[in-house]
Length: 74
Image (tube, rainbow, N blue to C red; front, side, top):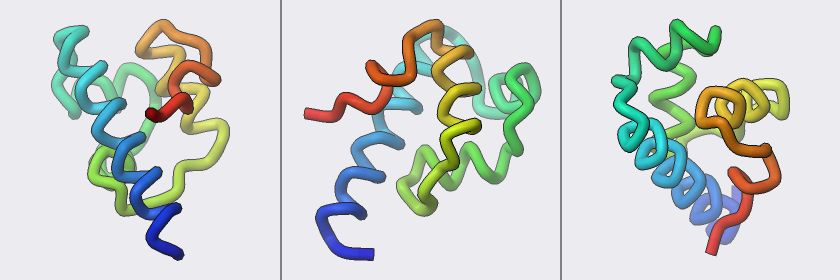
């Protein structure tokens, strides 16, 4: 993966983690509630994996935002 993509995935992960924490979810309960593997969520939040669209839809649902807002990274 090139550096630009890696930086994007890291920023996305930071955004997801921040929003999850702002809503009072710990990683384990969020993963369980929205049927995402805890390890998978950890890897996404740390920018170590490229999440599938269905996973992003689950995360966006849990964060109560449209998926396109989730993907907007500045």
